[in-house]
Image 1 (spheres, rainbow, N blue to C red):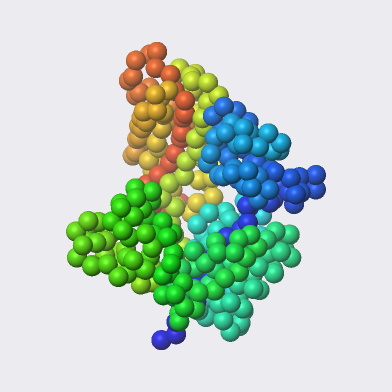
Image 2: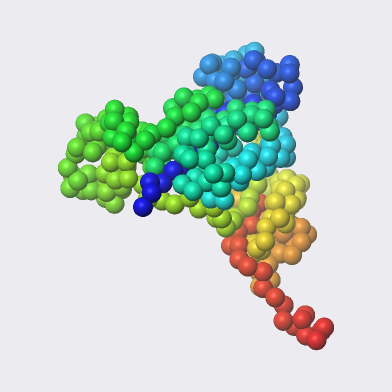
Length: 355
């Protein structure tokens, strides 16, 4: 049985790089992709902006404070999706086993590439060159015998980097690595591990399995597997949609009835996204976050799934009426979603009309 060849492709500062590509005045400048506002967050930052410590998901006001000279550009997701489509067309020249993680990131199983290249390294080199030619953007790539190692490798020499972890090098690669690099190890788990003297992946591999499982339960067993470079998860090329949603944070807190216009706008965005799905969503969800950060959700699954934008909006507005907090409660965020996707059912009553 041949060793798997997994490639992880991660575009470099994708949204910001698209903006710099399309506007020469932004090149080599600290660009921050974010809406301006006290409650906006950074969607992406160019590498010039990252030198100031700016990172995705931080408040835009913090980014402005860290780099007063930063150029803020509002995101244009329709343009980013179009570029992403071009990039994915490059992926599919080499394999049909492509698992997208986001617009700018994907796993590829190239154990048997369509392009006829001999190794995962050759495929990664070709993909990076073809992305540069097709989209005028750079991508970083990691090549390894499994997904989690490939993902770590793609970050090893960013930006515009390429790194391969060969099967014979797995243990040497993992040995000195901080435990926080392992998938599933967040800040709390990392702190617990380091407090136990387990600061590196090599230390976990040498630790007693019984102690790890007693402290971390089933995840302790997973930590042992990861520390040995074991990850059997497959590249899943067709992961069915579970939910589609959109949300907005207000510039200033609103009363419940003042959220209606935003619900209408979000319902339009969700319906446009859902209309491209081969399956139908049956459950409509309304999400609200109060000014003191409490999250409220209301959902409804009608007998017939919503078949139009007006159906979706009507249900969402009915869910708004089911929020029973005090009238003076103010809200900082609202979201609309549709979930519980399943195959379209044929209406047999309608079919009999044409028999």
